[in-house]
Image: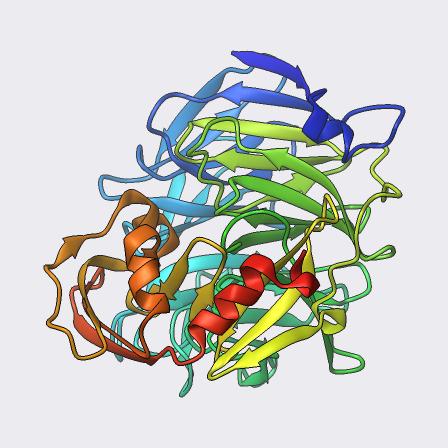
Length: 468
């Protein structure tokens, strides 16, 4: 079934050009398919990485009908791309393999990822200009690999730094780059020697997840923990950073550069996707989730359109990009230009205008590492490095530790503790905050945070003239 939607609400009218709103189509997918990624088949149909049924979905945009090609009993695909041979290639987390589906016959071929040297859980993939498939995998260190789809030869390499390599991209001049989530860096793979040349992000512990190249070879990266869209220019070695609109705190997850060099990025806490114009350095469009838990993971697109799969909502939103340009009201949110309005103890309060409305707000950064963030109504302690958290207990100063509490659904989504209300009030009156955490990865960890200066930082965020 297809629902044709034109976003004409007040929120959209502030974002679009005066003459028109962006046209979208919403394709209803079978419930529970949990599609994370989309690619366009040579015949114009859309290929879907349908994780929960363990299949390649084939959506006909003309009819809205979807059929599925099963990939195997344990299959759980997450990324799909088109090879030079016109076939579909998927990273399959369930079978820990690269899977090929023949575009004409639906024949399935499985290429298992080697496990010598430790676990290697396959994640993302991209094709270079020679038709070689490069992929990333998660393990004790960064892992990346290469598959020659013509011969079936596969090799993997393990880095000596970082952990949880994820997004991967190929530039117009055939350079292969990937991101390390825990390492908080991007790396260029030398295609001749397979060595990785590391480039650190501007801040530690920002945990990038996605990477994409524009037509000039610039790399666009989502800095998840800091809620920042970043650009790295290999020619100059310069980083530029723009704070995402919306959300408290904003989290970036998933980035894509379309055929017009507009950059699309997921703002997961704001349940929205934003388009960014590099020429004006302004956010020019917002696509809100179709329900409160859309759960967009990755964005891709084709000529004149962007594909936004809402995994939890079992929908695919197709956005027509015709006519997008920067409205006069859009705001430049380059973080390099944002002032630190207060430093107190280990806190730095930064002033950032919302990229869509221009409204000023401030956020407190603890030690400038984006692991601990302070807003007007919440203290956030990130635990993405441990895969999130199941439960935790709090201890303020030298008081007895509190009763363990289960992570809320919001804390599970954000992969960290969100302290508001009475918890925030107690934190504001404290100098030391300790957390005992049962992590989502099965481990147990402790956090001991010197929150000296938090009250002054919060007062500035709430009522400082530089923040309002």
